[in-house]
Image 1 (spheres, rainbow, N blue to C red):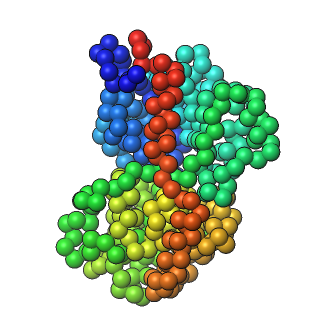
Image 2: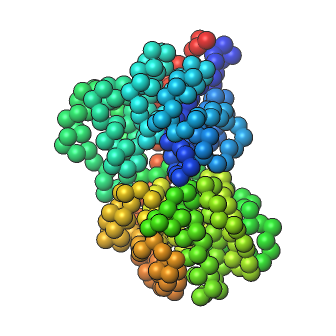
Image 3: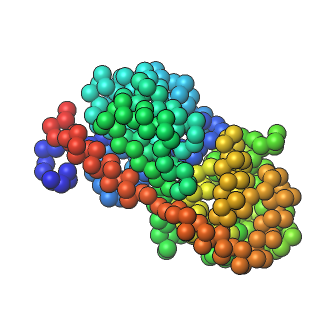
Length: 371
């Protein structure tokens, strides 16, 4: 039966609890992307997102925002306050999973709990014995070549027979082809065909250098050497002063949908090694990716480079600019990267996620007579 039918049914309430803070925003923006996909297909759903007061991030209209004193990993009291206030039907944790918070979900009668992991450390967190028993679904975001359970994970999963494990490649909302971007008012900047530099959140440092400054300097070096149209998205957590010039544009941050469109229109993308990697590969764009924070990124990028789905280099302005210029000149190399990424199965799994959320709500019967 369609959840939207009837007038005596309260709309389901969904609460997203992603890791967030001053040095990273990937999980938060993933929560926004999922929430916006849900809103597009189910405008009656009541959607809420938790965010650290230290995270200077976009807050698009249409969602409920709840401020924490820090990352949810460190502010369990804040999570308890929000859970009691919102009383969600479904909670989606992303890369944070505290036992006390899970216990409180059950005490409050919250029907369904989902956990998202996107790196080895967060994936292991979802297989803690007590945490495992509290989950209904575990969504593992991983490259296609890593989408299988280890022997240990298979054994542990038997502890919770109801647990549904899903392997996902990436989650994104297609950008509207006619979408007007922040560059629309720049008559001198092309609609497409530019090289896009985007590290991710723009916070943190690599090799002692702020990542936003590293990407900015790499973009400027590349443009000075080639004259090719260059677009830098410094990141919502960045602090570098921005300065645009002829055919070189620098912006602080853009909503997730705009970033999807920017990637679609780019000839080449230069990104950090986080969630942007799988997003760019799923969108079929050639990619140069460098470690931009997180101890897992160097090994992950090296492995993907060996599989010829992307190129990588050291995280410093000179090698990044030089490698970008070389790749821009080599159309055949760019086409090979696109072909290999497609063959490896990088894809957008957002339709499966929205369908899974719909099914979780229906299975829990959470929308009937809730008070």
